[in-house]
Length: 110
Image 1 (tube, rainbow, N blue to C red):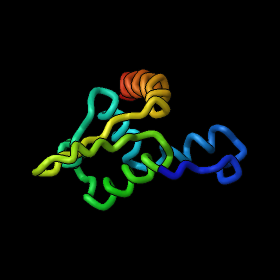
Image 2: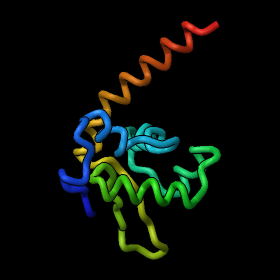
Image 3: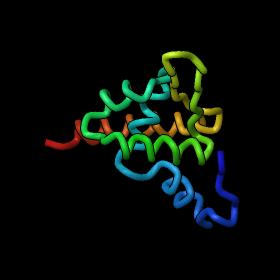
Image 4: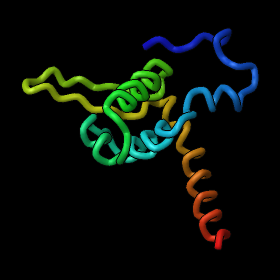
């Protein structure tokens, strides 16, 4: 894991958070990982439209940022799954707030 140093992060805390979870897929990956560990192929099937490369890159970035843990069971055939780290779990209240807003927005739109 190679977490960014403070000097590499934006000064604004909102910009810092967006730099960690921005993009089309990262929040949806976190949404899935909040429930249980997921295997790569499970995530790819559930996240319709995500390419293997984008999923790999997103997971790798989130691992580098300390949000996601990759557990390699060292078995044959190979078995690996992904879960949120303690730091990644700090995003769960934000995910809850986004879900509340999403439901509110859907009910407000005609």
